[in-house]
Length: 542
Image 1 (tube, rainbow, N blue to C red):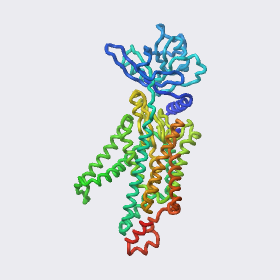
Image 2: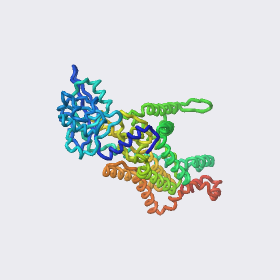
Image 3: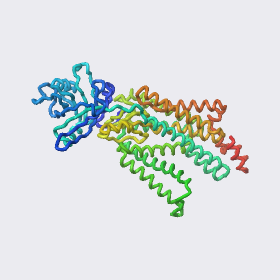
Image 4: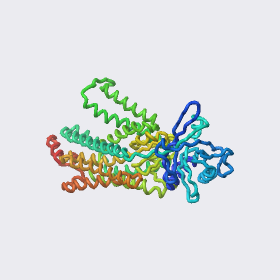
């Protein structure tokens, strides 16, 4: 992406992307202890190259070294070594003046055990052509200059450090959590859409209700031209966000706050409506409002307000974002209506092309070689996130927060975070579109089951196909070790499954064009106008 941002930020993002291609950086812990009157210690995050140096996986087995701050000198020549020497020290130097590998060579000649390179902005992983410095064997790691200052202020001048790299858990449970959330949301949204369709079909026995339903459907239904227009709007919004991210991100946050508040209310009000308590009402301006709905509105607004205020608190704000996101997806799946399978194919097919284009094609167009989807999902300012599509693994850097689009579900790897609390918190994310888009197809299948009396065969099969698509996405993610656009696997799985079911049941024509639930617009429906009950029964039997 090439958004309009200050040149230093663009250079940082470009250099970061370049460095990631040269090496695989890994986080590690620098455990610093101060030897004053009271023994104190504190953990800091650092990056190192595991292909160059091996670190202990536990603090107990890590080697202890005295820390020497040499950020005031370049350390590019042996003559820069202080008179008292640096033997058996872990020396901290400033980024710049000469290549850090040259600094490491000088430090090694002086007998140092480790070289810590301090940088003012972001954490750069050790990289470079190490073949030219084949004789460098000491540990090289990168820390922030802010942490170096904090060490001195907190622990004093006499500091001892231990450096170790805790191992990742063997099992990534976040995939299971995201899988459960995604399947639950599309299944519940589709089922809810079917219940609404059943109520609408029963309402056809009343002429007044039928007219109200017709107006409602015209407002919520996505016809094929509307689908095409919607995808074009998505492309336009994506490009605008690419160029004007730092302004439009706040617009998107505001829209999300409003939409998620309404969605959360719509979801919870349907739940409390089934509870036969607290139905006392207040009459205002000739309208009766239940007290429990007033309190519910306040609760929904409060949840959204708390998230909006603390949205960059990555340690816990993700919980509120996930709650609001699930409600947002549920509300759209049960509200938006695709009238037939033709519209489903057009929508899912175009959004699949949209997803693939913005993930895989745009890197060949953008100046920094990153895809537009990647940078928008991660946030283009000081981008420290390892992000390769809709379903990704990301790292939220606490020292460099930046506004992000609230269009994803997040699940942090808390097991890893518990031992790496000083470092970034790895997060697996899934875009809302990977839930809503297939969910609209599943909702159509559920409504078609109600209209044709198919005993949930379309709904169940499409939901299972969605689950299989998610599993396939995870398998490819693990094998390729690179984030994947989930629609690339979800769309074929769901569309092919629904098509096979319709073909096997010999209902493809009806499934493609939609059931006759809109017969009220046809001339032969008028012949039954005098007997609306029979007319409604005919429609339900279609």
